[in-house]
Length: 188
Image 1 (cartoon, rainbow, N blue to C red):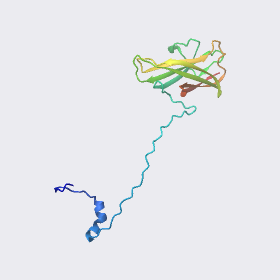
Image 2 (cartoon, rainbow, N blue to C red):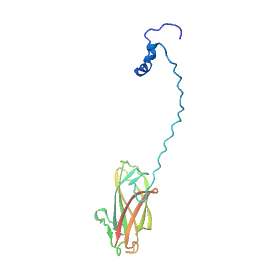
Image 3 (cartoon, rainbow, N blue to C red):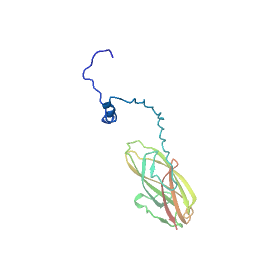
């Protein structure tokens, strides 16, 4: 631009471009090339983040508020004070004449925690023969210095046979309104 000569300056042109104008170069006549018209490009549309939808009857098997995966669900029978883990009988059928409390045992896996722990609630909802029967909510706490644990809770009555009627039960467990697990048992 300031008029000084420059040595070694070169331009690269693609072979495709050369081939398209080669005949014109040989003849010594070049057709004028129109200035390309730019097509306006709309700005990209932001991709919406999908909102998780809960499908009825399909548990997530995950408790997002504490980052725990539900790895197992079992039911057992007991009185007001639940039996020790080693003496529990995990049955599918329960005798309606003696049944008092039916409890769930929920097994959780989560990232190792030190002494800190988090509280969370689980609501259990019972359905008897397809119709709503009862519900209860239990407060729980993740154990510190662990990466897995089990929790239990249940519902019943101190009077044998008064809490559960004969029939097929479906139990749904919710945390923060999201279905995290479900199971079933029968009282005969």
